[in-house]
Length: 478
Image (tube, rainbow, N blue to C red; front, side, top):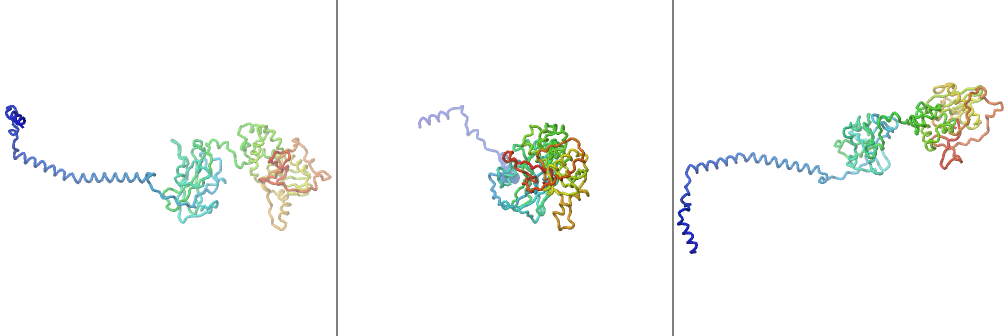
């Protein structure tokens, strides 16, 4: 304590230390008034800013809340979804598409008609057409060809939507035309549709044309989407070389499967004078061995079967070719098959020719007709002579019908596919008549041969297992 007092006393006696009490001045009245005015002004300022600040803060808080709630709603991981209710309603395309499909070409069904969409009630493997009491807005889209995976026949709307294919960057819309259609009474006709791009750039290399209900336009039970079979879309320039299904008689021969335009087979056939599908079919009827020899060893048996099968789907049309001699008249179809015959004044139907006539004699007449093809008498439809030759079959099939009409032959019942020796030299038609002993008549038992796709076939002992060879006949339907 003495030390403390000594220190204090020494400090008090220091003349250099200022006296704090000496400099503590009493505030003036003016300064007090000034401070009070300043405080008052600040309070007034805060009072005027408070409503503005409250409004700004409130708006910002509300905006933040709305933004946060929207992000929660959009987030698939946070959104609570009710499971899709199973439904038996589904959209389907009425018929398959006509293939191949090319860019910038109309998409048609297998019968070359515009597409149609149907609403069906699917129960297992059964699909029953149905309708809704109101119209329904539909949308045509393009799907990846690998959807649905495997043989799965169930999918969700999200799975479907994830497989919708859009155009490539910088390209036009992948599908153009009438993409929005309306379903009424269970049917929705589809207008013109065209692809603008090929399908080679996606992994599956195939597209599907699909249809779905326009999102947000229907609130009822789910209607499942429909789609066509997977198909390859080719560039338009390939259409110039496409095969025709079915081919026409007048088509160039390279329209047939396995015969490429300006390829080896095409050049060989052209050199032999076989320019059209009709030329090809005529020679296949008369001498298929000669035709195979023209094509050469490059045409394997499997390729030959594909080509001849395609050729035989050709439509025959309504032309008939009549080959006349002194004792006979043959009516042939466009590929050199006998339709009817008159021999020595006796009319023979197709069935009669397969039973009572010497086949070698008929073959001789047919080969002669083939060699003289350009000089045969051509008729459109049934002429009077052809109708006369058809009467035997008509009366046989309709004995009690007094006004029976002529029965047309089966145009697609192709026959001969086995070799026959042909003499291509000119001969006198007068010498192709019947001999005096009527050797063209025979008593034979007629045994119907099995048919495959409208073609009579017999199993050859020399053929490999399962090899089917058309039976030897120049007679249409025989």
